[in-house]
Length: 239
Ligand SMILES: C[S@@+](CC[C@H](N)C(=O)[O-])C[C@H]1O[C@@H](n2cnc3c(N)ncnc32)[C@H](O)[C@@H]1O
Image (cartoon, rainbow, N blue to C red; front, side, top):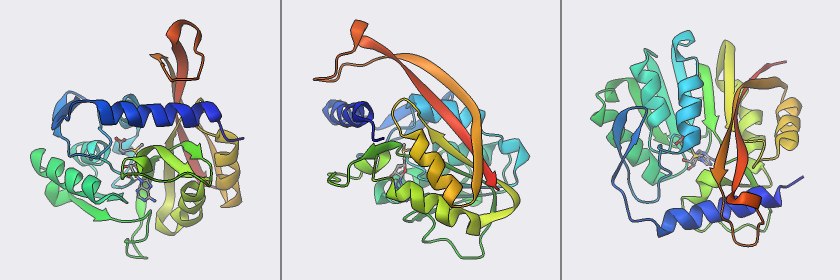
């Protein structure tokens, strides 16, 4: 069932982001990164957790869907993946990832494409590890996307999650692993699991962490002002 809580927290998160003073850099995983307007910052808790959990050393080729500012894809290249491809539906995110690839000296090993999920990949392009830190907040079909940033948080009717699972297998090498960065607290894991299963995947939680975070969403009572929020990296394989 669509989580009203997740939807309200997502809206609050975006409004907080828009109210903040503009930043042109941030720190994540001990490095400094460039940040362009309207791009989800890789200093987010989820980005750091998922990036530090992914088994880059077990993969030669890495595909990131929804690269944002490029932290995960660039970390994959720095951890030895010989070929990395990073995709994002947001042109600002693509430009931001390219800037950060140059900043960290790995631009020759990364291809960054403006792509709606896998649409701009060559049909024969396959990868050992495919990953998406997804916009896991399920939004109602009536949701209006107001900026590129909305694509970082919301997926209306989980249409993009459905397409992600439906199309991912075309780009997997034999034995490839697919990872999805998600939150059971804010997303709809039952529906996400059904979509994966319908597309022929079996999955389970690879790693999970629960953090107690300050939540101050108008109209949403949170006793004590903090709440446990989980971040889960799911792993999927072809059934
Ligand atoms: C939660 S953000 C994660 C950003 C970055 N990977 C990180 O961890 O900081 C989700 C990203 O997915 C991108 N995205 C959403 N829908 C997409 C689609 N259909 N195709 C490609 N990218 C998409 C968003 O623009 C956003 O950059």
